[in-house]
Image (cartoon, rainbow, N blue to C red; front, side, top):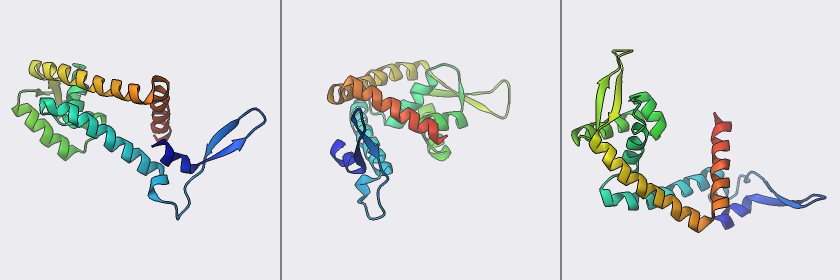
Length: 167
């Protein structure tokens, strides 16, 4: 991926050192030089690898995200959960309905607002979440081994900064 990304960098010589400066792709640039494409491609590959690991438990990545968020024990509304797990409401509702049927999560009426429903993880869901989390950690360890600890931490920092600056 670094070789693809390097097409959109130019090297600038300063008095003290050379540094890479990003330049936006031109109108006629290939799609592989666009940041949106590179982020989507990286996301697809990371999710594909994680999906392979989670398939041992028969669970899609989105279900792991739901269990991970609900494992904090605080109870979350569907709106909060949709934002946290990066799913639209209809998709989340279908997935949560299946998880309720599988006794992994349950709904409770919000005592502060009777119009709201809060989602919680069940004991069965907590046990599954624990197994899934160890698979997700092993995926991240694989990335760190392949990419390096320093580079992985820098990538996380840069992505968090990009997300924060977009909001």
